[in-house]
Image 1: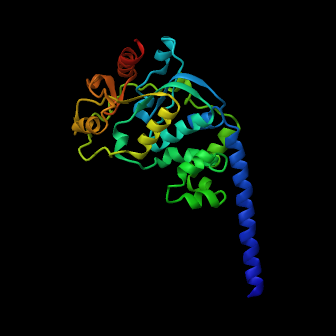
Image 2 (image 1 turned 180 degrees about the horizontal axis):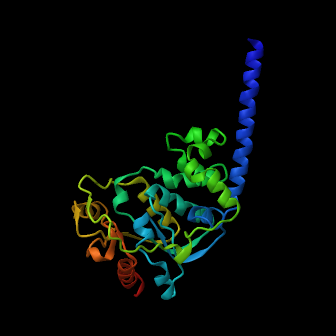
Image 3 (image 1 turned 120 degrees about the vertical axis):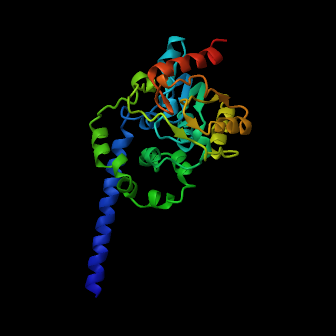
Length: 293
C-alpha cells in the first residue's frame, strides 16, 4: 500500500510539474504576441494616443468605420469584438489605462449588452493567458465563480478553453501569424448575404439598472477625463420588441439612441449588423453629430 501511495504521489507531482512548465511556455508565447488579436495587442503594447477609441461588441466592430474618423484628422481605432459583452469592454479599457493610453473620446456601443453582466466566455478567455501577469486582469476575474481553478491550477485555463487559447492558437501566435483583426483600423466590414437572418425578437430583453460594467466604464472615463459617448446602434426593420431601446433611454438618459438612423433591410447583412454601406452612413452621422463642431 505504501509503495502504491508513493507511486501515485510521484505521478501527481510529475503531472503538476509538466502542467507548470506548459503553463509557463504558453504564457510566454502569448506575452510576446502583438499582431494576432486586439486583446494581446493592447496587453503587450506601450502608451498610445487616440482621439477616438471604439469599444463594444460586433455591433461596434461592424458599425463604426474607423478610417472615416482618420479622414477627418482624428486618430482612431475600433476595438470592438464580435461576441464581446460589457465585461470584456470594461476590462479592455482598464488595460488601456494601465498602459497609459491617452484617449480623448471613447465611443461605446451599449444597447443589447446592457441586459447582462455575464462574461462572454469565447472572448473573456483570451484574457486568461495574462491572469498572472496583469493585476488588472486578475482583479477583473476575481468575481467569477471559476476564478480559483483558473488562477491556481496550472495549465487548467489552456485546457478548458483549448479551442480559443489552446495549442493551435499558441502555435500560430508563436510563429507570429497575423489575423485581420487590425485591418481597417479594427473595423470589420460586412457584405449583404441572401441568407442573412433579417428577423429578430428582443421582447424578453430588459436593460439592467446600474449595469456593473457600464458603470465601471463611466467611472474610469470620468477619472481620466475621457469624453464618453455611449450609443445604441441600428437594427433592421423586422425586429420585434424595439421598445427595448426606449427602456434603455429611460434608464440611461445619457445614452444616445441611433437605432433608427439606418433601418432599411438593404443596408443590413443580418438583422443586428449593417453592411459596409450601412455602416458608412451611420458613421458619417456620428462624425457629423459629435466631431464636426
